[in-house]
Image (cartoon, rainbow, N blue to C red):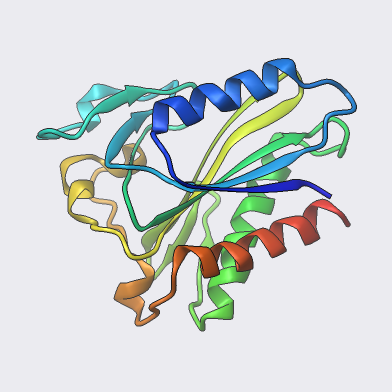
Amino acid sequence: MPVIRNLGLQDYKSTWQDMQRFTEQRTAETVDEIWITEHPPVYTLGLNGKREHLFATGDIPVINSDRGGQVTYHGPGQLIIYTLIDIKRLNLGIRPLVTLLEQAMIFALAHYGIKAVARIDAPGVYVDNKKIGSIGLRIKKNCSYHGLSINNQMDLAPFDHINTCGYPGLEVTRLTDLGVNVSNAELAISVTQALITALTK
């Protein structure tokens, strides 16, 4: 059973460094962890991220991260769940892990009456072709870190200044736009329960 840590609002860079440190120091016996958090406004570029997908970012900092994927935005009101998992121990490949994260978000959204789907061509979770959930991972020493984000009660305006996930014209949505008003804490329970169920099968 993974250890669940509720971190609250945390600086992106220091949390990322904590994940790197945890992964570097873990052993074959280290228990997996799930970190629940949200970040102050920040744009992050993945390892393949291209600055051409950033426009007028204003005062919001841009950080080059070591996760996969392109560019995204994090801000208060967005639920972030980091999955620090020994995928070798679970006999779990990278694509199956991505699918597991997508399905956890889809299951949680269904709990609130939202029909969401995954797409083969663009990882993440979508409602009516608008992105509501994103995934970015890094695998090191056969262990994953980074994880998923779901747009809940956040300001979506900063997404207007990027090609979200590197896709021009990709629209985003959030739970509040879909008539669901729920705290990040409550939403996190639904997602983590789905994650743990899938990971402990």
